Image (spheres, rainbow, N blue to C red):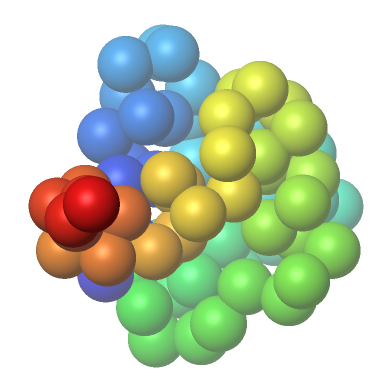
Length: 72
């Protein structure tokens, strides 16, 4: 499940229908991707990243990978 994407989408008050239109896919197709039943294509991830003006990794990588402690 794409928890970061779901959270971001809801914070920005976007519906699954809005996102499906952005990606030019059906609402059910988008829903399946958001639930993790189907994967987002690379171009879809870039479109979403650009739409929200967010780093692609912050949206699509699990939190444990994006908020790793840095060691110096």
